[in-house]
Length: 358
Picture 1 (cartoon, rainbow, N blue to C red):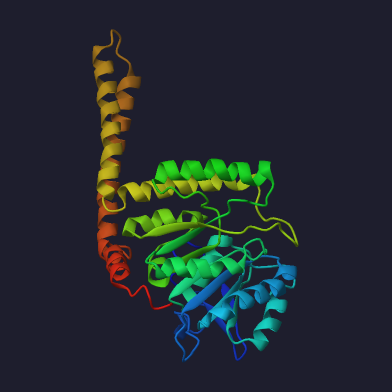
Picture 2: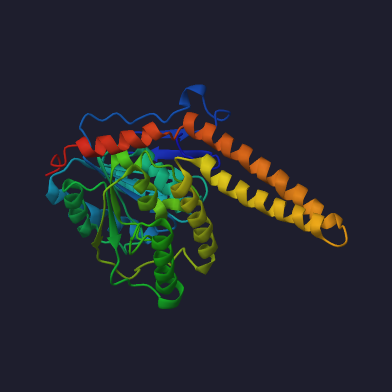
């Protein structure tokens, strides 16, 4: 599987009306010919894929499915819906399977245990076959009736369209206020001024989103990561509704995860194409401290082993950082994510036919 940075997903299931298949990346548990997921054979060309991560949303599954169908059917598009169950402990999968028995457009992917929203989105993105991919939450707070406007923006030439919950229906202290601070901080650090990075309702060109490596909690930083390839990003206001069933899966404990991911994204954005330069900067700082410590030890009235130890320590650190930079440069030039892969995404975006979904 092409799921960067994740632990082994054990097994997950893909249910549809006509088959039940088991896919996995653990060769020890499966036959050797299941190294890559087997595509579900379909004749028609899928224009739109709607990806919905679910976790303990048994009461929301049925109304959500009907809301999506009612919003998309009038568009007369060939589309599919992927419900990605993130290890739910309730009847989410059972109710989704009943819906899939009557609609071949609906597919369900299910993890054995809970991995988080980003892995669920990545699994859905990997299995989606549409030329346009739309992601949304499964708690009924995102409105499927907004999806046609996202498709319209994609048709106008954008690669990514982000939803902005301008009238957000969440608690002020635990949800809205931290989100405002986080969005401001993300915009300042990454240079991508998105008002609502946490909104799951987004639309992507399939070739763009499938080329972006995601891990940890980095689904919030997809626009920033996509900016490396020069992707065209738009943001539109969307309807946001109060939660009808269940309880929120988020709390203030996720803040530190977002901050760590933000540091990672900033490093990637700054040095993705030149990792040696980033490590060289850090090496230079270490060598500067080493030289200052050495001079302080030489000029001190009383010789102290402390200054000489610091000089040796930071001098060694500078050498190590420089070697890490060389290693990073080699990995970047020969690894999966190369300058050619970003260039390919950019060229394809420019030359794509933006009117094919009209």
